[in-house]
Image 1 (cartoon, rainbow, N blue to C red):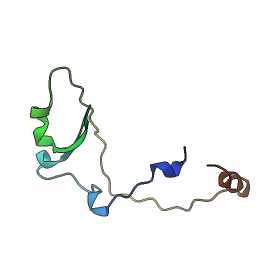
Image 2 (cartoon, one colour; image 1 turned 45 degrees about the vertical axis):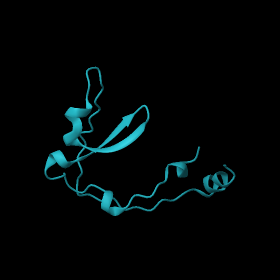
Image 3 (cartoon, rainbow, N blue to C red; image 1 turned 135 degrees about the horizontal axis):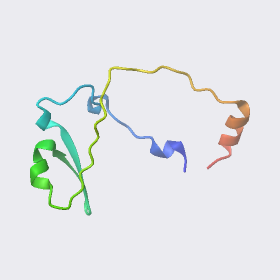
Length: 84
């Protein structure tokens, strides 16, 4: 497995920069045995059943940006080319 296996395209418009307003309009990803569906947080009372598990993500979006430069030692770069 390579780190590049986890690369994906994410349009700028889909990156949260501030909380949804109203809060009940926030998006929700519903995973079921048959797949996944885009829903709204307002749908939550209709979705949950007794015994269901709800996983909450209480992380916050902060206005921050890190800048940096990735460097590799020559021996690591040569070894990485042979992977695959």
